[in-house]
Amino acid sequence: MRVEVKSYNNNSSLVSAILFFILGAIMFTNPDTMVIVISRILGGILILFGLYSCIKNYILVRQNTQVSAIPMVAGISCMAIGSVFFFAAGFVEAMVRFVIGGWILLSGIMRFASAMQIDKKNNPKFFSLLIISLLLILAGLYTILEANLAFQTIGIVLMIYAGLEIFGWLTNKSVVKETMTKEEKKKKRSKNKDVVDAVIIKDDTDEKKNSKK
Image (cartoon, rainbow, N blue to C red; front, top):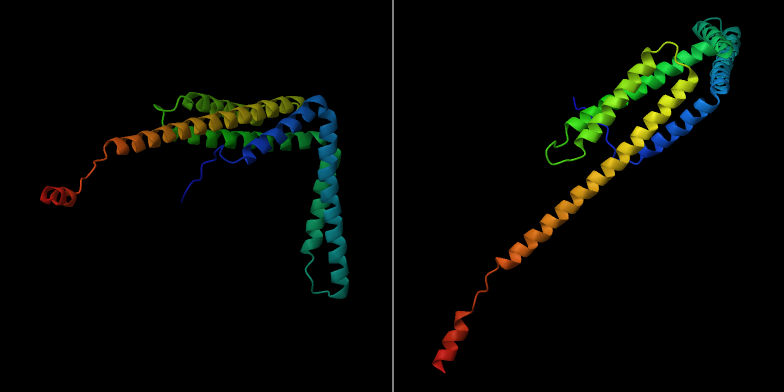
């Protein structure tokens, strides 16, 4: 089984970090509005899906009595869960907190694994990448374990996470650029060395012809 380590080489890391920063800014400035909006959107989707499932199953059962009523039960369950989402904003806050905290924690672990694969002696950016990964892990754990974490604090954590990700992306780009520059210099040195070490071979046949003349 191969574990694929998350890296900053893909530009999608920068895009996702910017989106998380925007989301965090919205949560920080309007936490109450975000709770209500997210709660009602998720609740409305679940209620509509459950209602559709119930109506569809009811029609099929009337046409054929042998059709299973399991979709009806699933639809009622979705409507019940959707009602909780629609009227209980605190539940949505806890759910979002666990999802966001888990995402930040996983990202920090993957960044830590990526930092451990870097050459520690020849790479001056190793410690900065290591510190970023440890801060992400701490931020993820704090987001998950803090039971009274308000949506506004989640917004701050998201903005910090996005800032660390953007800084890590920029740092990785500078490391890649420095590595490419060093490789180009090595190639130029090797080419110059090949030219210096080249030996000119003189044709002996021309000397013999000149001596006969």
